[in-house]
Image 1 (cartoon, rainbow, N blue to C red):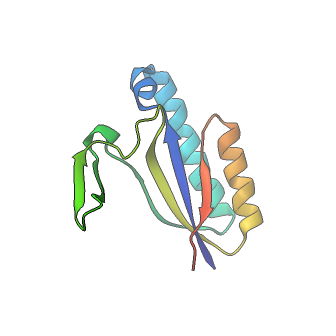
Image 2: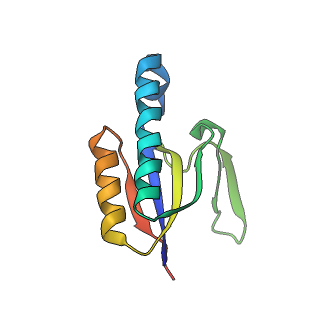
Image 3: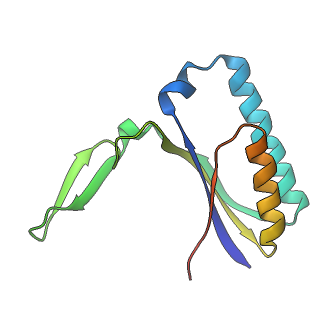
Length: 116
């Protein structure tokens, strides 16, 4: 069995402006994805939305042996990771197929296997 991280990047500002029916459509897409994972024998280890990137704390080396701590996201981009799925699976091909179906419903995702 391998573990996979499915990242959900999205333009936060645009998402906040969407009408309720678009949010409902997104929730239905996630519910279908949960069913697809279960039907494929994949184990959903953890899933969660994330707090807005504006509430993140970024930390990076300061070049002098310490750390520079700043409020806000690590990078200023239009898209931020807004949520994630951690999935355990013994069938990567089926997991990729479920992710492809998820993306075809309008979701932008990034699938990555955990190293090690």
